[in-house]
Length: 206
Image (cartoon, rainbow, N blue to C red):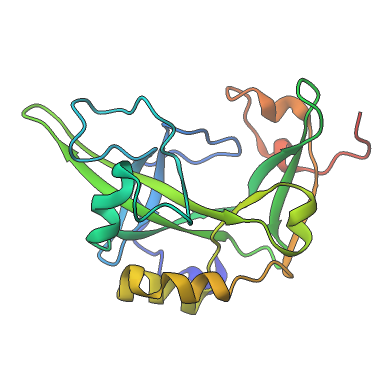
């Protein structure tokens, strides 16, 4: 965890960890107050059920402030950090897409900017989150059109402490130079597959 150890020392024990985490799973998330296990895929407070009919695991930077699913969290600066060893993207023709793993070259985690929400009913209480994405830049632009908003340590502290007021500044400071990506086994395409080998580089791309 390196430089992130102090900020993420309150690691939620009941979160899912692994090498092939998918939307709707319970993941580790960090707010300004604590680390907490949250559902990946935001459930807005006005939802009638603890789920969503829409894909809310990502929020586009261009529209996150206006979309109904994210508006309450944005207006209340419910910012959070979502850490990971890296993330997958796919490139190629439909039906034959090749997965790639993107990670920092220095082996530090990828720490992504997110928003969190708390949904309740008479019987249930659920914390959920979304990861904010932006148009890809630098070397990642050839791989995929979108990428998560990724934060360095000082930027992460700003995001947690100062909230959405610093969002535009953080977007301007995005830098992909420290990232690397490489092809990995297509076994990652099946969400039930797990294991460290999923993030290992494969020698050839079929």
